[in-house]
Length: 492
Ligand code: NAD
Image 1 (cartoon, helix red, strand yellow):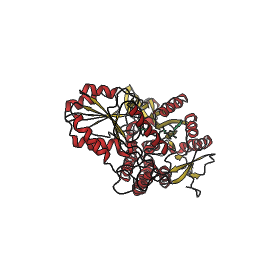
Image 2: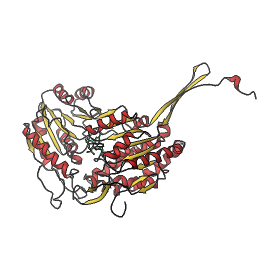
Image 3: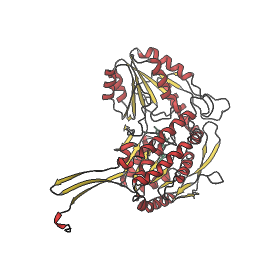
Image 4: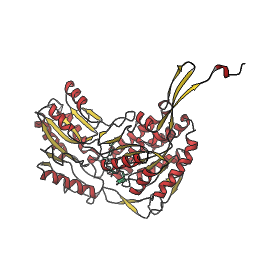
């Protein structure tokens, strides 16, 4: 960071002050303290990074994969050594609890670990004698310069869904982090610098729409990875595809959870409460709609209301705090307005988290856990992504009715079922239209070696983030058919 508290861009191996005409305050959402200022970098700074990336790519793609991953091994060690510091930083700029930040960093590190296996993962395949004396090989080659645009809710993890795979496969990578939480990546890029990546291989350009549009339009940026809200994901997908790029764009969510009457209710309540209110509901895999089936309603609703009302809300670095604030004052206002909309549409506010303060943090953006009961399935509140600690309840008589409610929505990020019946679980897994499914699991977040498999309006593209999908996204296949007639060989 420069001495005046302004964050820097990291371009061509140099930390550079941005020539931005505007800066935004980065505020701690629990204390409202201004921690830094982030530049809204102009398009020219993206162009500089793209140019440096093109130059670096000429050399980087020729570095053997086994050597490229040595930088990632070093980076992984540095992330582990600095995990505590990074977790505190995440809590301070994003609001989640220290334990949640630690878990986020764990997931981030796992992606670096998987990408360290690139020498095996990017292997091609071949056949001898596809015709007499002719062999055919398929190689994977990197694309060139690639970029990612990331959201506020996982400042440490989401950028590392992409960066490790991109650089391990031989690409040069530009990150545009969320302007709401740019500090974690500022620190992580210092660690990347220490890991010895050559200039231009990993770069960060801070900013917002102007920087994003410059990425989408730049002719030398071959692929764009995006994570954020659905309207922006759609925009990114369309504009980048129009410019001829590969795109993977992960969008928003509204994740339903079905609770069957035969579920273990104590376990279910605990897990669903963690899923709905963990990270203050600001997780794309947060449970946000509960569908109780038959008798399940009688016990589950009461137990969940108790869990919601007793959750300890506060500053995420304080002892015993189970839920932090939401990201901004605007976000808090938007969430409280949506709760009021739910009320107007006929829902009953069973636990009301509006207009509450945390002692000592009166300026924080706190919304306490909220439960809306009897939410009409066709209402706007039943379909809108709230992205806050608000859980909506609906009721169904049968599993078929519950699955119909799950599928009657535009998002397809995740759906979960809680049951002790294998048959019910199988029917659910088979029939729901979502890319991630949890069975007696509240946040079905795929491990780094599986794709993060959103469907429908939660994802635009073909290949998802993480694992082999990441490897395929960042490489193109080259098929070589070759003939070497024996008679051409010199006789020895
Ligand atoms: P957002 O869409 O507002 O912003 C995401 C990124 O897009 C940021 O870097 C931002 O600078 C940029 N951006 C915003 N508006 C833009 C515009 N008009 N033109 C160009 N760029 C623009 O999302 P957010 O509020 O930071 O994050 C929360 C959203 O992300 C939620 O909808 C959540 O569900 C989603 N999310 C999805 C996943 C997933 O895996 N599907 C994971 C995490 C978060």
